[in-house]
Image (cartoon, rainbow, N blue to C red; front, side):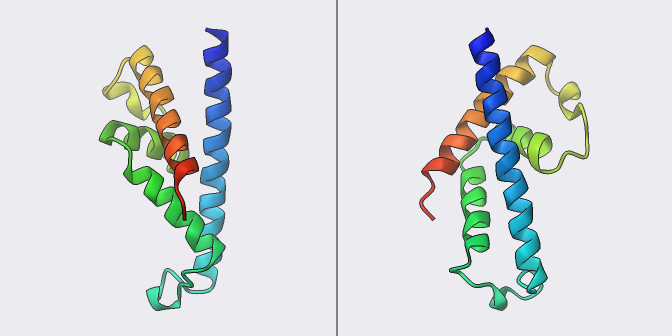
Length: 111
């Protein structure tokens, strides 16, 4: 059980860092007007490539995995959002699978 907890903490930390870099990248692109005008986006920009890498990894997830990754790491506006859908043990079981799947997809994405 302890190794699963360590793995879970490690996964959380990695995905929190991915989310942080994702929002930094969005901010950088937005500061040059990229989201306001798609024609301004530089396809070779490391910020744009990072956003695409995150989006591609996200697209590989199931609907439940997407909800977990989105609500727990990217848009954390609803604490305990999962209570109406899952009991605690089911949520944490799904959460570990979602984190592992997202991280694997992210690390294997070749952008």
